[in-house]
Image 1 (cartoon, rainbow, N blue to C red):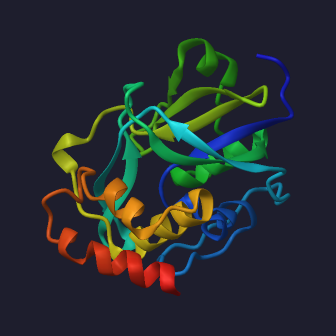
Image 2: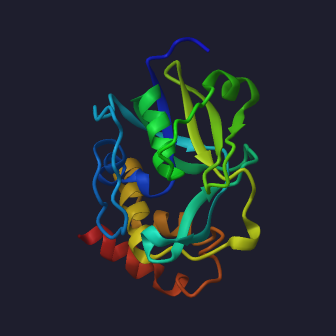
Length: 214
């Protein structure tokens, strides 16, 4: 891999909302969350940001203490070119990306991520049972590599409903990044596993409208 000073980090969950994501960089507790993030050692703000469509299917699974037991967002590990998950990319340093992963898998141990190998193979599995233990290479954007992370498996037996506080971040992030209308956001979210045919679908329209009216 070329010696990129910066890479793109691609998100698809609550980090779509920039204020939420910056807690990973500078530290802090996002509104509605129950976890304080230490931030990166290098607290320089992202040099750029952009929208980015991810060819992996979005779904919700597991039970996150950070979000009162609601599900977290994942993308299925297998690429599907017919799928378009609305993502957002931030230009951060390689060291910041590693610190970001360390916070996501909740470890203070030194972590080595071979980004060159990740590019060659398309993914890299970490030696960890953490929720986000697969680094994904999603191609290039403006000549810089794009990386994200998810679980190495599709967690079909752990599908769960996201907490409204968590969904609010995603809804706000979708508006912030793509200027989607309430109807477009509803159409996007309503059929995702963890939301589809769950009680929250009855309240989703109101949640979207309330979030976007704030």
